[in-house]
Length: 104
Length: 186
Image (cartoon, rainbow over all chains, first blue to last red; front, side):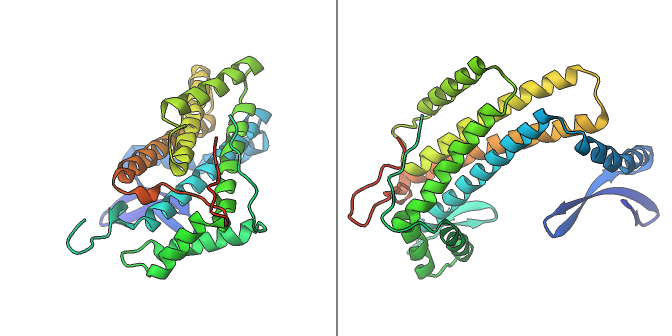
């Protein structure tokens, strides 16, 4: 479950999967965290129900979003490639140009 | 508006090209990439093989535009208005005069803007009604994703524009083996 013990207190963490990694996102502690935990335990069931009852409109919207995401990702990839070939590289998520002989 | 690509002179192997492309990207995105890898990536972007790559990206963008407009829940007249608005937005962003890479980014930014507007409309319409928690979370997620997509597209366009001021190499000429430039986009 999402409850984790730190010292004398329990804190509630939400688990999120990112590919093969699982990330813990802090939610809170005390009454609010209990409420969130209770809601979360029922939400997978509700989501499962909602998935089986998806309206055609939602299916259409998801299809469009998938196409848009795919195109967007491809464009980002090709931009990365263009920047790399122009002599840039990423440093701490920032694009920087390699210095040549003391010039930037 | 349609983007047209002339047929490449070499037979197309899109999957192979995409795999090579991704491998080269991984190899070159570091502080000191091997010059051979950078040269290979540049060849892939500029050469005949690269034509298939650019063609893929342009057709993916066109397909996305069609999917976004056609799958929205609106009457045909409104959809036509959106097509017109998208086209005029691209012109406002300097689509006609932009180099190939910027054209793609402009297309992406304009389409992400349209998608964000559509999701915002649906979101506000949905939130007026009494809805379940799950549905509320679903719409929040969709809105956040649309906002993130739009921000990313604008940031990338701005970054490329800023960097290309000092880096003419960012303006690609996609050439056939005969040496003639190919018009990738109208």
